[in-house]
Length: 177
Image 1: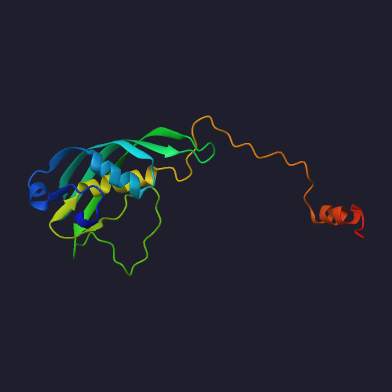
Image 2: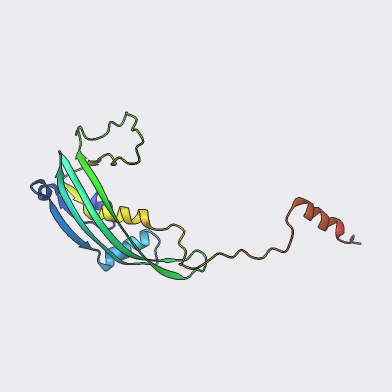
């Protein structure tokens, strides 16, 4: 993940992680929250915070984090804005090019829902911690938001709908002169 592509760049150099790891507490500023809200079509992103640690992992790096956010979306039923609290935890493993830990792109990967994800390719000498937080936030945003307690009520349909009902209406109408 490249810092240039990130909506909330929080780069960490690999040399900072290499010895004994690092811990970071991140809080998105207003400008970053506005960029993220616009990218994900939110009314607003009122808060985004994360506690992260990056530690050496074999010849790569392991990132573990917990994050929380407050998003404001528009209800798809009532069209009212409402706030939701989101949060989660994640673990991402990164391995450098040529590592034996990277999956073979030609091999078939067996499906095991309980297994850890394979490591991602570690490109360059920086890791964008903010990019991983934003990626996991995106996965939690409801694409069809509904304000709590709002129920969709379909309009009352008093008219019978079938091909035969249409024919009946045609035959029941008086002829035009």
